[in-house]
Length: 339
Image 1 (spheres, rainbow, N blue to C red):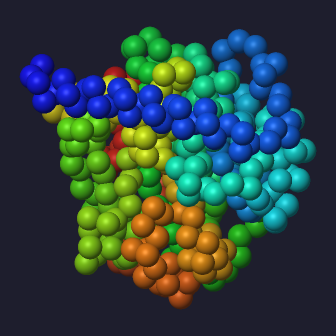
Image 2 (cartoon, rainbow, N blue to C red; image 1 turned 180 degrees about the horizontal axis):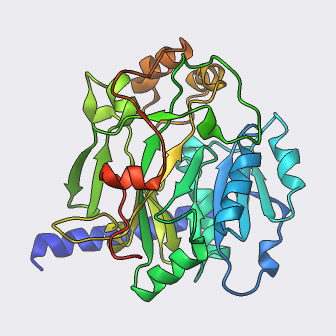
């Protein structure tokens, strides 16, 4: 290892320590509402999430991940006013905290979750998701999340990568209706499967992936601004670990090496992104005013404006979503090494 590599490794260690200290300092922004995870014993699988006004998504989101094998949900409510908070207090497998602090100034909720993961995730497999994400992995219809984590443990893997797949309807955004508790894939049945780009980032040793319908439709003239699609949602947590940017990357950097590179096969998954339910039009108008979801919010003003107009994202190259095997055939996830 040369001097520049040693210097970079040193900087990354101090960055990790700073982020962990941030999480510790932000702990007082959280008010404990119901804490049942503190009594959980044994090898449980946890799901961590920050939510705001997600009542339409949460019934399916919780049931879907329960069926995969999540044992308990650790959630932070950020000033919901649509019944989300009340709904979550009624769920027996949810531990709940609440905050009125800024989502953006908490590193988009990651400071809050980092503190809770330090407290309750150490030594456990932790799934970190947004409420509009559904976790997909090879054989997920026949093999449980517990079986996946046992496979990862047996292979010495402490993290599992997933590519985010934006789902969208064939009709204009905002049209039609979605019933809470129903499968959002019945409404959002389409995705882009061909326009993904990959770039290795030496600094964090991760594979930066961009593409999908948002890159095609909203960022065609500025592809470098398109959303990042690589994520690391599943981690065997340790108090020394911390997410750097949402769940796109982590420190220590070795946790970011989760996608096949240089003919090295790794099992990987996907996150089905259900952002484009009918309420997206009204929510985009609200978020354009709140400016809580992007560090450089002004850059995304045009993005929110276009969303608020209810565009049609479907085109002749759109693919109807089928199952995980379809995503593997497209090179968007891999079952390599796991039978």
